[in-house]
Length: 219
Image (cartoon, rainbow, N blue to C red; front, side, top):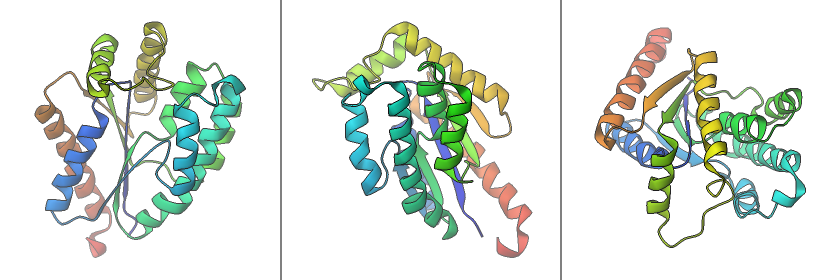
């Protein structure tokens, strides 16, 4: 039986990594095989591209080239990590996926929607998340959290961008959730981490049970 593919999206400082780690521990304690991964990155080839993207080295080349690099990294990630794990029946938890490209390069990067759709089609090659959690938080609070987490480190290519851009991204993620309510669940990331984790775990349990009911002979 194909596994489950769950992605986490949202703006800077929304707490995606914390929630993914907590959910992975919860699922593993219940006996599930869990693969935790991230984008950009996740596979050796994609991790090499990650540095180029987040360092800002590709920024002078333009948004369209950045989008192509994200797409190339995603294609390798899907082929080398995500699809094989799903075929093994694992639950894959991914920090960012196609929706981040839709928002960061498509909406705030002002790239042509048809161009973005074609890139996405090639990169995901039919591997679409079963559930996407969009962790929503006030932009100012999210950036404050990101600054605190980073400490003395340097802001990456996307963290350094201004409030107006960050707000546009927040609104774009919420619009995606409204457009695809069967896949996307908006989570209030301003709540304490435990409350957020409990809400996510509830939704994931429902998803697992629904899959078992749909495939009773393999449950």
